[in-house]
Length: 189
Image (cartoon, rainbow, N blue to C red; front, side, top):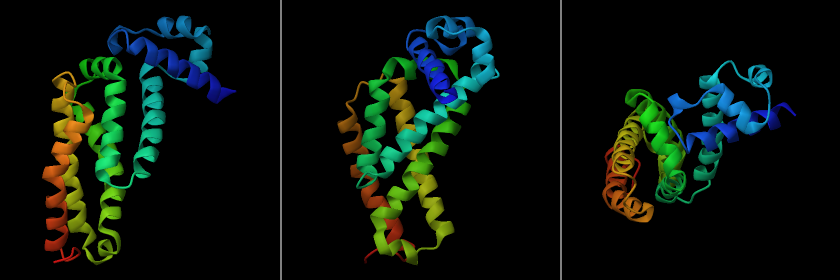
């Protein structure tokens, strides 16, 4: 029951967030939209930021699980970009409401959680022969590169189709990932 109520509050919050910026949404807006009283809200969350954090973690957990089932990083990245575009208005309002540094930090954390298993999967058994600290540096590099491109894409209004963006990034990244693996001793020569 508690999870159902939390999900209902989160759904109301996301619907409101698709209509207006984060800093314009009140607890009264959320509870009115959801059809519960303020005490119900406070039973589950301390404040709007607590709700936002919970909703964000729930959404990203699902997205991470979905991306990890991808055959390769390109497919996983495409799934993420398509989901961002499907929620364009919500994402735009979040981006306008959250400090840029915080947004970038959270996106990098999530992107690295998504990319590491996908890049490891691409290397297959070769991943075992690579120094993990060095490989972590490669993953970290590609994380920041991809997040930087995603942020620019979002700032530009998500005009480029997800498939086009992913294809372009794949053409740049795939060769570099394999080259890095080779230089670290794990890829095929």
